[in-house]
Length: 242
Image 1: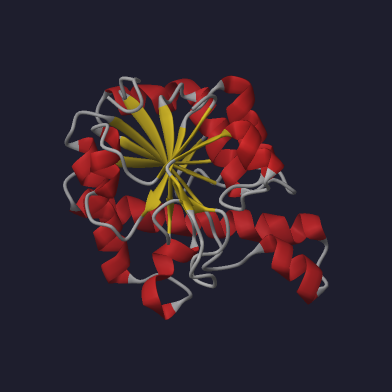
Image 2: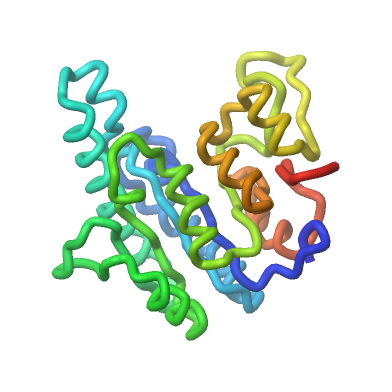
């Protein structure tokens, strides 16, 4: 149980930067293997698992647009392609853990992964396969946070796990401010009004409209995802009411 909700299906949101590990860019093998092991722990609980991954370790569309002078649509398309590379890397790492995995992309590239088909994705998960959703939403101007919420709603996930570099949501950056205060729980309205930066405003608004619980936790805390699924108090919960 997590916050009174029986978790049978969960969506994990990973940033692209998380896959880079300490090197800060590209793909870090040890980090990929660690993440895959954490995913297996959740899968071993009998929970159906889906993952949405970003592409910031390879290319960030918004940055390329503003600093590189590229057309925003083209820059975002480059970012979406980066998420497919990351999705394939996660697939390989999770399958090394003995868990069957499929990658589905919002941008069709049938030679390397499946197209996103909602019913097929749900069927894969029912058969015990982990699904990695890549390609964002398939559209420019949308973040992979928004893509994560969209996919979570489409597959009827019971909650969204947002894995970050810190152990929850703070009122300010805890790495810059020693007096930062951590929230155990926060409402969607508070997250939107206070512009808490853990997810973008569009993603929080979608969660609020569809009452999708979000648990923000530290990816680098071994077993954190597993404990969250079991209902232990960990990270920060974003819910409709406290």
